[in-house]
Amino acid sequence: MAAQIDRDDLHLAAERRQQAAVGRGIKSVGVREDQDRRALACPAVTCQSAPADRKGDAGGLCGTGVGHGRLASSIWAGPDLDIERVAARNRRGGPDRTLKYLRETQRMRLLIAVLGLACLTAPIPAYAQPGPPPDRASDRADLHAGWARLLTLYLREDAQGANRFDYQALRETQADREALDAYIAGLEAIDPDTLSRDEAFAFWANLYNAVTVRLIVEEDPQDSIREIRPHLFAAGPWGMELVTVAGQALSLDAIEHDIMRERYEAALVHYAVNCASISCPDLQPEPWRGETLDADLDEAARGYINDPRGVTVTGQGLRVSRIYRWYREDFGGDEAGVIDHLLDYARPELAARIRSNPQISGHAYDWSLNRPED
Image 1 (tube, rainbow, N blue to C red):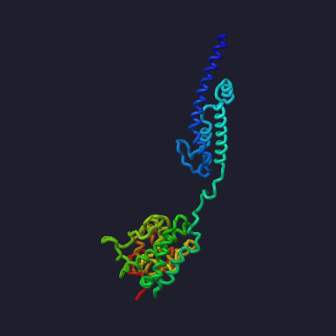
Image 2: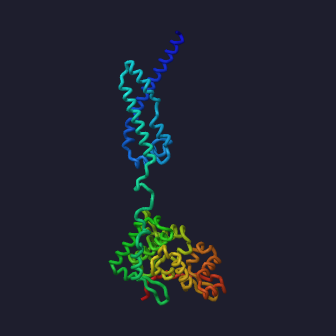
Image 3: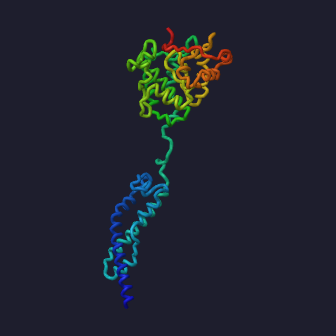
């Protein structure tokens, strides 16, 4: 009998513990009920993008393989629900709405589990798929057509074969000034990171040259671009912020030195950008384009080096452009490196003369505007 009483006491104590646990479970289920309803209303894409709101929950309840354990524990957290045991207790006189509530809650949890797994395995909608922006500049027919037209109209070749730009004629033609503004504004609206490497080089070089032309047209210096100074101690306009690309205000210096010389072969950058001066490498008659960039840069370098503006052979040695002194580090870092660079692009006759006396005796540079001669 004593053993029977002990077993009954133990059974009663266990039952009370179970009942208390069930009570706590009902309370926790009630707290989660709103969460469950919100989860049911949550579409798959929302689940995929939901931010983590708890430590260790990378991606919320739903994700792409992360947080599955969190999903299961969130749905099944709390004590196990022994429905038959509760039913037996109800038959002894307890209210049956607890059993009904528990069964409904368990069905709710099962439904959420199924929907959660569906959320985890559902395909990402098409609009959420990663990919290139829909308006890639490289997909346009000809990004630089406007600039090509202006070069055709206003670039002139002088008697020595150097290219000069008719700034005054453009200044007097309002429609073409607006066309230049529109071309530059079109480039400003493009993210150059959407372009290929060669297309991006062409983008920056054409932008630099177009902005320089506009600056000369607007400011109308009498003799040299260096007359345009934002303050007394400036050497010229190169530090002025003149254009905005991808939200970043940029100067000509920033385009040439911080972007182009940093990202590309620095020596060739100098043949691509034009500073509106006689001794600068020519402004080319066609815009730079990614598909012909290598050949065009090679031709530009050869054209400059085989012109007296680039190299002149004298009895004392070579008189070369000051570009090769200002940016010596881009051409090998020393005089020997500069000479090697010149030989890479010199035509046979000039190359032979350079080899006969391979030393630099002086530097020269003419800052006069590259406008047509009177």
